[in-house]
Length: 399
Ligand SMILES: [Fe+2]
Image (tube, rainbow, N blue to C red; front, side, top):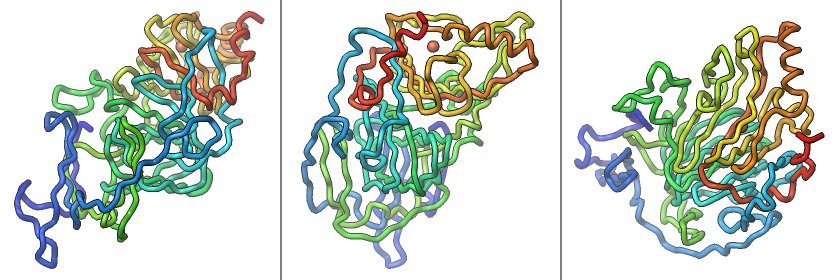
């Protein structure tokens, strides 16, 4: 995160004695990225954050239907024969909570993209492989962590830094897309000043980011935390509840950003997806396609031209409104399209003519809303994708 935040009680200087009301010392913990060389925060615990009493390996299994299998072990298949794909996440049922119930749609060595639908709270979880960005497609869910809580709602991207102990507590049914990186997810560098402040041309700013506002304290003994590392899954049991932080400060913390707060950039003729970029991670970008005025050149074609991004696979999750370019393809809210490198994609037949006609009848805006993840290495297909694929999609341009 680019800016400094302080929550709860902290001492005036870092690394000095900071005492509890009973005279004992709070335990200071640094959470820092890139080996003391990037963003960090200092957290003050009531108990030692090192005190574990037990460690259990958690078995990994594979397959789309097995509860818990998706957290690490889902087997991925190459996109062969190469083709554009359409997955209907609406057809996927619940496989568990927002952590163990992630049904893998696609992934590669840089990022894994999973869908989850649930009304169940997760156990405490720490992903030590990378940052996560969980997009809440629908419903409300409380994100609880050592940094405090965030009340997340439809349209929120919740960015969870590597190693954050947290859990998800839905209020009713929640549908979400989990973007799991093998590194850190950040606002695009070009949106920030050299010191990390959002620049005026950025499509969002610090005011749009919501982070924990107060400490979250809980009691408990021998508290299990599911930990994910490259080696697999472990359940560590902490002597005391990890939610024991009375205060923290720094530039590293979880936050939420709502897609409604994205400020779309519009051009006179059609603007390419980099104007919609929201986050970047190692080997991928995340873009938000939001309702906006249509391109306003009198002869504009206000939907995408055919394009072949030779270095990218394009994973598009349709989350709201009407996506004009995919008209007649069967794609609807809840659908995912995957347009891989090696295939030129573009509007469905008749879509260009239809939008030009709509403009001639006075339509000036698009209601489309979509979350796009463009990866720079090919995406393999997960068991969730293969379980809900519309196998006719590839041929819809030739109809
Ligand atoms: Fe595209």
